[in-house]
Amino acid sequence: MISQVNNMNEILEQALLYDFYGELLTEHQKEIYEQFVLEDLSLGEIAVEAGISRQGVHDLVKRCGRTLKGYEDKLHLVEKFVSIKEKVKQIDELLDGYKEREPQELVADIRKISDEIIEEL
Amino acid sequence: MISQVNNMNEILEQALLYDFYGELLTEHQKEIYEQFVLEDLSLGEIAVEAGISRQGVHDLVKRCGRTLKGYEDKLHLVEKFVSIKEKVKQIDELLDGYKEREPQELVADIRKISDEIIEEL
Image (cartoon, rainbow over all chains, first blue to last red; front, side, top):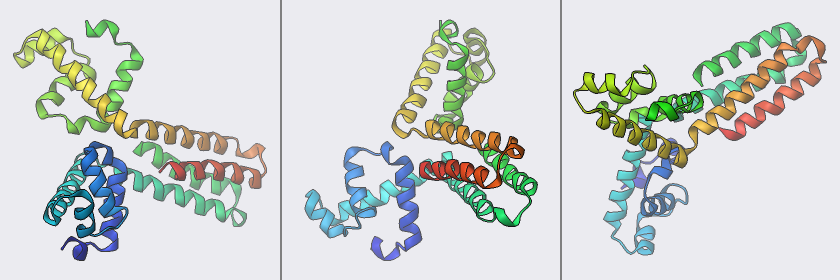
């Protein structure tokens, strides 16, 4: 069963991939996939609601997951965004500790990170 | 003719869209589209090289442009990246002028922008 192999990281990754590439799925796929990944409904519940078999829901969810992963494998945009987000958080941490630093040093350290972000964009 | 309606902004936009979504085109499409948009070859030159008609190149380039634009219309990831890039540049400008500011003010202003970036990510 899908729900047993889905640990929290996988769920988060699926939600992130859906957030980025979900609009490339069909309306029908989006509806089912959202119920499974975002609303955490069971395959059985979704099947009853959608009027399709439990196996049908299972297959659709699997297929959507592969499709979304396929976009990321080609485009790497989630990876890029996650990396930028981490760097902005590093800037935030430097800002938190500004009182213990010389302004000149602080500015140089933030600049280093902002340059890295620009390079990724 | 495509080359007459392509102003510089359009070329830049096409290159940016290609940079983000180009991997979703086929190898053949990528080859032709790169020659036109990135290497700035003429339709005639590309046609000779690829062994297809000038009209064929024209149609393929148009179709690829629409495909890439279609991805952006759905995903808005280029728009998001451009917005983040502008904000990082605003941080850089604040860093440039750090000597004229109180550290506390500078930190508050940078934090405001970094928070905005995090919200977009």
